[in-house]
Structure formats: structure tokens, C-alpha cells
Length: 556
Image 1: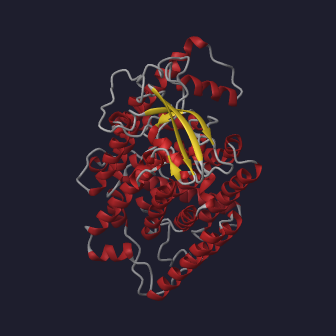
Image 2: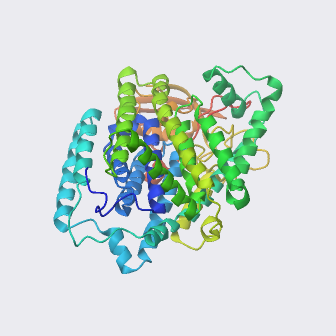
Image 3: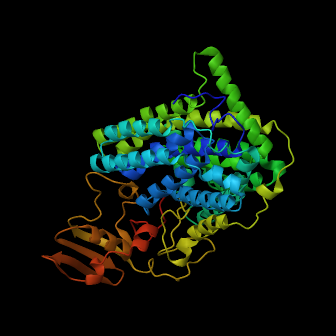
């Protein structure tokens, strides 16, 4: 991991907007991994750790950044559909980045493309491919967190060896890196705005406006309990409701307008840092995603100021401590912190009891890391605000056509899903009290029955074995979300198709009671035991409910 910073072909000290974004996106990825520990039992999760680490060690490398995006998408596909809203949103962002990145590279000149796609000499590529194959074989077969962590460090050291060859293409120039960055940054801004838009739209329902069940009131009360704050009077509970709506509506508007952008930064940082303190596991991961996305609203001159601020911080530390001038040193420090906190929390979860209570407790380690990261990032943004520049309208609000627009389409469609009869989970309806399946509660929107998944709702009355009970060793957040017994028949099919052996389930529809069974290979209803298609399994996930009537309680 040592190199000469004056001759290294990918010296991260040179200015590049892509470098700034890559650093923030990689550190936010680590925070996501700290929030949800299930990745540590999968080879896709460890590949993501490896790629994220390599980016932090050499953030100026477009090749490493591209591998990080691809690894993140691979890990997301493994987890689908049981992922939180913001992790699915992150996947849409990554798909946008990858599409825009490749489009900008394809339309660049030949010399730039050689710099982007150059992976080293053939001998070096062959060695790396062979090492990667051995690594994957061992990780897939062993699946022990400590062994996989040690093996990932070895791979990191191998891939970080500097290649000394006079034939290597030079690093990307500032203009070339800026071109790649502009291939996706404008779309990302609008994706963030559309996500906020849907978050507000889904909350415009009668139960979110009801202080007795509103998520806004409940989350504020839980925050007060966690921070040992005095309970606020009930008379001001409506302020929590309408205040949260106003914040989520105005943040994207403030950010999109140049004159109010600094105000938007301040409001967004305060709101999401405060939100991250909530005890619900993973909320700080959502805040990390938004805070990292804020960098896309900075002009090129402000991005340069951010990187200058980072250099000044590094020099300040070097003046006081005997630290090597290796440009990879600080990336190594971040990786070390992740290993200490992230992998420690994963081991604690596995050994202290794999239940929701333990899951939430060990998330405190990730929250500590997030708060330190958020403070550092806000300091960087303050340095950027000191630069007054004319905005680049082409990259801030204007959008040229690019295949990266697919990201905006995906965000729009995802928020629309519950309104056309598709999924009700991870459709940007987080903590919204929204119900579209039966007894809908939205103030003005009605579900269009284009798909029938929400029409066939059933209640699981009895089950042997209990198909709704979480497994002894949960493998994802599916087992922690919405423990109700009322759900679409589609979800019953999914659960029955996963169970081996004999099973008997009694379900109640509004007008009938039905018993489904499988004994000795014979089934009562073939359609009930037919697994959903791969597309359905990966894209659809529905909430469970407790009651057929009454207000919709707060749920993720």
C-alpha cells in the first residue's frame, strides 16, 4: 500500500469532481453495510466490501469506481425485494451512475476511453483474475465472517500493488473526469427531488394527519425517549406532522434554486442528522445517503474547495502526528474503522441473539460512525459555501438527453407502484401511515386496479408450521418488518413455496375460510404452492396488516 505520491499514476491528491463523489459514495456505502449486517454471510457482500475499500485507497481511479457501482448492484440484486426504501433508491442511483458513466465514456475520444477502461498489463490482469477466482471460491465455501474479512484484506493488498510500467495511460485530466461526472450528476439531482416528492405524496393521508397514530408524532416521541428529553405537550403534536411535510417538500426546492441552495444544505443537514438519532435501525443509513447526495448540488469550483479542505485537514494531522505521506493512508484508516465497527457489530449480532432487539442495539456502533462522518462532511460543505460562483445551469437544473434518464423513470415508477396495484413496501411510503389495499386512507389519490395483487387480501388464521414466524437465524429485514397476519395472497404463495415438507394453513378472505395443505407431496391447491416468477420475487414485496378496519398504524 505504499507508493510515491509524486509519481503514482493515480495520485488521489489531484483535483477531480469524480474523486470527491467517489470518496463520499464509498464511505456512505460502508455506513449502509454497518446498518444491515446480513451481507457478512454472503459472497456478494464481501465483494462489495473489497470494491469499496479499493475505491477509498485510490479514489481517482475510474475503474475502481465502476467496479464499486457494479458490486453494489450485484449485492442489491441478491437482497431484492427485501431491502429498505433508501437501499432500493441507492440501487436506482447506482444504475444511473453506471449508465451515465458508460455513456460518457462511449462518447469520449479514443484516448480518454483508453484511460477509463485500462486495467493494466495482460500479465497483471491474468494474476488479478486468478486471485479473484480463488477468493470467490473460498468466500463462497467458508462463509465465516472473520475468515472472509482476513481474506478480503489480503485481496485488497494484492489489488493495491502499484504497477510500474512506462506504457500505462496517464490519469484522467480534470476536464475528462468532469465529463464523466457530468454524465450522471444532473440526473441524480432530479432523482433526489423526485424521491422527496413521493415521500410527501404518500404521507398525504388521513392517518398521517391523525396525531393518535401519525408516524411523525410517534417517531418524535421515540426520539425524545432515546435522548432523555422532556415530552413535548400534546397541543403541539400537529406541528410534528405538518412540519415534517413542510421540510420534505421544501428541501428539494431549496436545493434546486441557486439563491436558496445554501439554506437547503443547512436544512437538509440538520433535519437528517436529527432524524438519524431515531432508534429505528437503519435510519442513519438513509441520512448518510441523502448527505452524500448533497454534494451533487455543488458547482465545480465548490467541489474543488471541498477537496482543498480535505488536503488541508490531512496536512494539519501530518503536522501533529508522524503519519506517512502515502495518499492511501487515510483511506486505510477509514477501512480500519469499518472493520472495527462494522464487522464487530456483525459478530455481536450473530453471538448475542439474532432478534430485532439485538439488531437495533448493535446498530448503535454504526450510528457513532455516522455522526463522526456527518460532522466531517458538514465541515467540508461549509468550505464549499465560502466559494461564490455562477452556477453551471446545464448540470444543475438543465438536463441533456442521456440513457441515464432511466434512473428518473425508475424513481417515478417506484413511487407509483402502490397506486397501480403493485408493491406496497419500499415504494417511498416509509413511515407514512399509507394504506392502499383495503380501506384506503389517502386524501385525494385512489388506486387504479391495473394489477390485481392488492385485490386478493387474506388473513392467516392458523398455520402448522407457522409460516409467519421469523426463522431462528434471520437472513434479512423481511423477518423484522410488519409482523401482521393480513397480507396479499401473493405473499402467502411466496411463503408456502419456501417451506419443505407437510404444511397446513387456514386463511380467511372477506367472504370465505379456506384451508390449504400439502401432505406427502399432494397439495390442496396447486396455484397456492406455485412459487412466484423470478421477476415477481425480485420486484414485489407487500406490507402485512393487523386489522381489517380502523386507523393505519405507523409502520416502515
